[in-house]
Picture 1 (cartoon, rainbow, N blue to C red):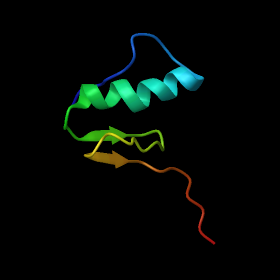
Picture 2: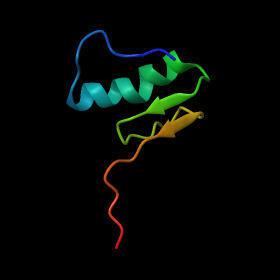
Picture 3: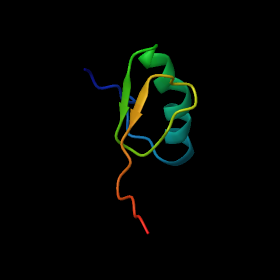
Length: 56
């Protein structure tokens, strides 16, 4: 497992753009383990951690 991150911290629309475009290109079919509650449209092998689910 290795970390994939932008070269510098991003926020807002730039961060969203990076997550949806650059990240899928860098994973290239590998399993992506996301800890940020975000599902990526172009990543087909992905496990997403969903935090603080409230039932009832």
